[in-house]
Length: 197
Image (cartoon, rainbow, N blue to C red; front, side, top):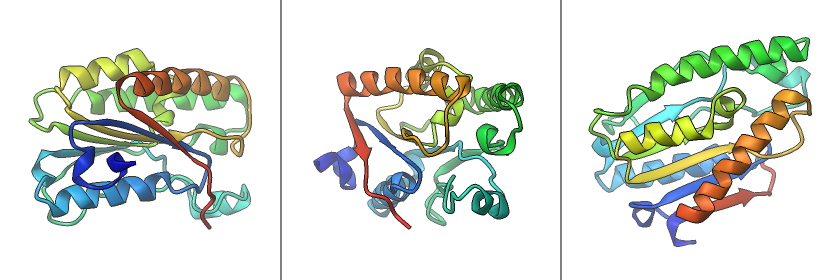
């Protein structure tokens, strides 16, 4: 998997999927650090969609380490786009409440996506893309990325069973499958299975 090592991922599209704590964000962090170390930081943008999950809530749900953030290396001149987003499944008492939170998240993320065209960045990392796919669409996401003339795309997202089911989860899975099929046609999709503590 040459595209999983530093500079060779330039010009490629890579999707990293896995369950909670399988190392998705850690792998993206390593790839981003590798590109920055080679002087590409000013070409990079991080779109971090990881929700804010209080430590106590994660422990209560038995999901220590869920929702890891992707921060650029200090001083690397990476554009950093993020906002406060709620974890719909973990913080809601009903399916309806979870969907309302997912819709609010998607609206917030859409404002971040609108900043991509014209940014002058052609390397994009998206952390936790599935938070958007709970209520947003793959088509809109890919249209925004295309409009921004992104040449290198590294994306990670949730693909597993530990966060439960329901209508929101099913929609997320359907959209994630569409995204996976896109990456299988245009680049590479990797599913991580080894769990990290």
